Image (cartoon, rainbow, N blue to C red; front, top):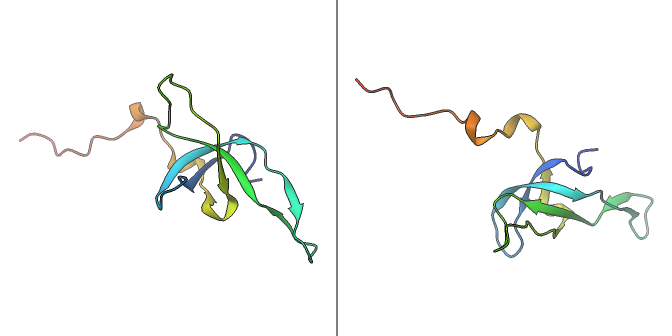
Length: 90
């Protein structure tokens, strides 16, 4: 599924209103919503890009699933694949 471990997503960073790129670090647990037969994911465990602590480790962060959207792999690139948008010198 779109939220399996290793999936690339956009998610609202905790205690902000901004979306950031992240990777699902643990496969989610599906639960049946009370009063219905609808399975749902309540929260996801993510690692956000550029979120290293002072020791260089990236923490796992819990984010409510309503603040996470799947993102196709095509939208991610490595810095070395970045395109120079500067116009050529005359």
